[in-house]
Image 1 (cartoon, rainbow, N blue to C red):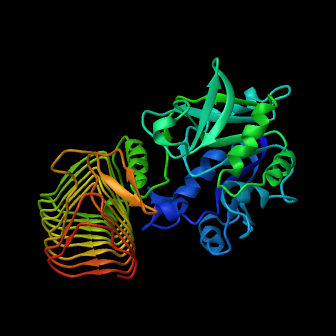
Image 2: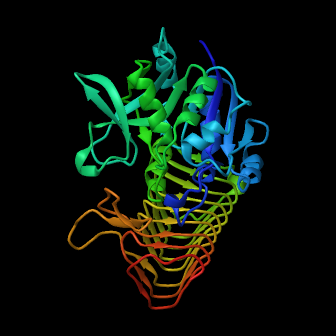
Image 3: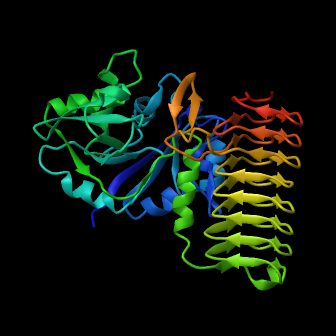
Length: 405
């Protein structure tokens, strides 16, 4: 099997649409950050793997990745995917696979390699979408690719096909030269470069039908979580000497439990679930279809359903449904995340001062790192609470709360 010379993972963005969460590629799933899941899957398809990151997050990525990838610092004067790719100038040469933050079946890379023939210089994966997605939409004329439009108006999309940003470039130097030649003030430099190649008849695409998990917005953590949980096919428990499970506890797999986990009397865990190291599931707690990090406390009589919890999360007689709680979050007794609108409409969220449809009927709260929510507070569906916040007891949180509030 032919290997691509260079694989480039774009990780230099500021993740502002991901607020109140941070660094989407460092979000852990099944005990390791997402970027390592990428590297594990991509390593057999590329000779070298490069991560384009910012000066601010380089040390975080290096700590997790070590020597499994090389790092390129994105030029702060160059924004977006175009800026990240241009930052590779003079460092990477030859053919290259450029990927964003979305998870896909890595075997599809073989189809890209097969498609790259003759005069073709750029091949990408495209997938049909059922609802609006903020990406590059394909323009087709007589079923032939004629252009690409970045983030068109939702009411005027040119097709139902979106570029997944799994892009195979025959010569990265030539593509960078095209990117540098795009002189516009808009944020679609990358797509305009592809568009120019399309006009020259040098672009093709693979219609991709496999799984695809996007992680642009914070609620996408839940769909990514579901992907990894669905991959758990049988119980995988740490050695019995490293676990404490009460005789009256009920474990309905499939469940992964790491060492140091303690499960109390009459607690119930219904899979698929992941329970990280040294986490306590206290008496009478119910955990189902959830991903829980290390050193968490799921207190007595709590219910956690279809939710993602980071490390060192502490809960005390709470209901947490379809929610994402980052590291160090604390809920006082009686805090509830409402996850379903009375009118049964899909939950909306404000992102960069614009209302975005999450396309989810059930969505609870998304809470940033080290935030504390006081006793008997209620969080409305889809509410986002920033990092290092204090929400006083008895509050009803109806709208987003900024960091450090």
